[in-house]
Length: 220
Image (cartoon, rainbow, N blue to C red):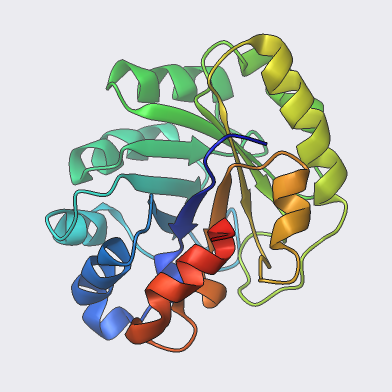
């Protein structure tokens, strides 16, 4: 596939005691996006960061913030993340909120809108929203827990979505998140993903290795 492979390091795997510095280092190492995992302890069984933290690191980099909202409800928090500096906001159709309303609200702020789908969710859930989406995020682990193994059924889902995107004629990015490493990276790229979220794999070996890790994920 000729599409440029983008790497979106997940700051969840960074050293939180020096988050700003980590964001600077990962940006200088060539990250295309900064992936921000937002979990509410309700939609998923973990609690991470809110808009204030996102805002506090926004001036550390010009790299776009790729914000993944694993929260329910969604709508009341969109403005907060927009104001904090999100460039892309992905939401879950599995949440009880009105998906279309939330996507349109994101778009009304001139922020890119993404739909993130869990491993047990059929890829066809994206179909009604294809005309508003800028990104589709395939979860290749169950959200909420770090360090899980890659779920191989994500490959078929990526292939189906790549076909759907190509048929739509729209510039929709296809992102994959969860358990991505140097062993399985080629299979997800071959399946059609062009944005790779990697936490542990990117931050492995400390700051001196970040550039090498990112380039290896990209296949350079």
